[in-house]
Image 1 (cartoon, rainbow, N blue to C red):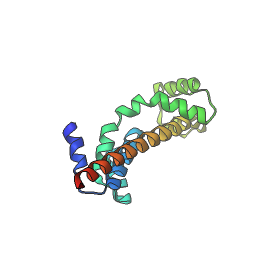
Image 2 (image 1 turned 60 degrees about the horizontal axis):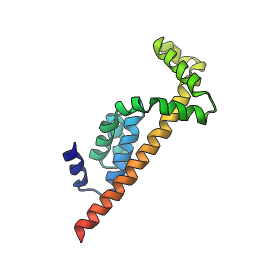
Image 3 (image 1 turned 90 degrees about the vertical axis):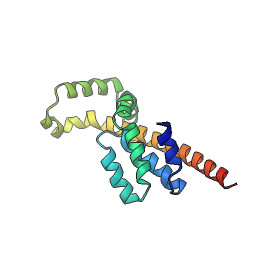
Image 4 (image 1 turned 30 degrees about the vertical axis):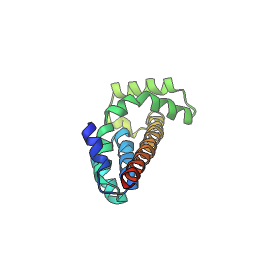
Length: 147
């Protein structure tokens, strides 16, 4: 892992492209339902560093989504002025008795929307944090090598 991170800093691209790629990769890795394919597609569209966006996505894909699940429910519920414990309980019942037809019911928005909103906020904040840290480190390291 340490070697992989060191290689990231040696990529021949601008610090902004690498940092944005890594930050967007983290965002996509945390947000459920997206991942490496979405990361590569977004890298192509936005012309950010493909290696960095793929690395960010792979480092956070799935496992961080699970870790941030409760936090995302709390944030999404708070923003939508709902009781987070009730949303959590409804979500667990939804998963337990999952049926594809249930996704088409209007009442499902009461369960899914707070979670999606929460994940967007959490993924954005962590992606922005990774972007800023990486940009600062890359800028400092590259300016240090030029002197």
